[in-house]
Length: 295
Image (cartoon, rainbow, N blue to C red; front, side):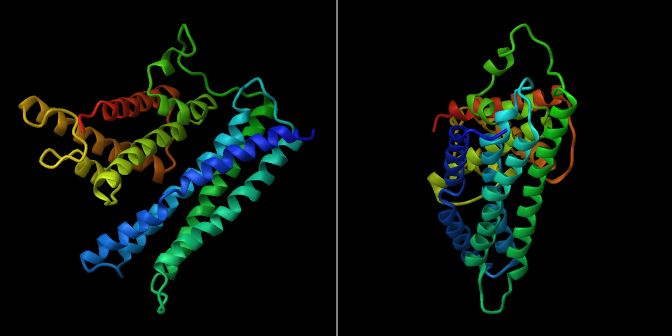
């Protein structure tokens, strides 16, 4: 069957919006990284290259998520079939939308890392390889979607509740927006990883806006929720209870990055629906706590 033009236009517009948002302020982030490393005499170090590549790949991963949301998630409903021509259309769209973004990754790494001696050539080449690997994961997801639909395999069942939306109503809206469709289509580890990437990105943006400094992961959380110099204060630092809350949540935020986000991002880890819900509720709690911050 042919893809309706209006449907294709909707998908394309949703993706383009997500793509633009993914790379927003990246240049400023790279400038901050180079400035920070220059101040310590490490501008030409491999650490600088790694930080820039990681920053670019993190944005590229958001482009990947935008593609999945704009195209693949349209078939998340188990009742909707996927014809052979629709599957081919998804692959065509993947090539059309993501392959240029891979070239963009190389360019965005190449430009800030360029030097006459080609010291960092391997870094931007590695970035391109990583981007292609992430692109191929989406290709695998399309093939899995095809097989599921062809064989009539439904996504793995969620824990039963009286009302289908009861669990999601308890979660933070941002977690619901980015993780629900992945969870309901059976991509449990992906749903959890996406949730904690969102936590990291929100904290990173707040820290950047207040300090113009760029950090990531557990290091970011320890700096953001520091008891002595908090960028994000969760309670009154002038009281013993407030300080205990601050240090406790700092450890939870940092631990979530080290023990949940990083393993999910760098290893092929499979989890079931119950454990995925545990992670999603934890990510929701952290975002709700950020919403309640005192400064």
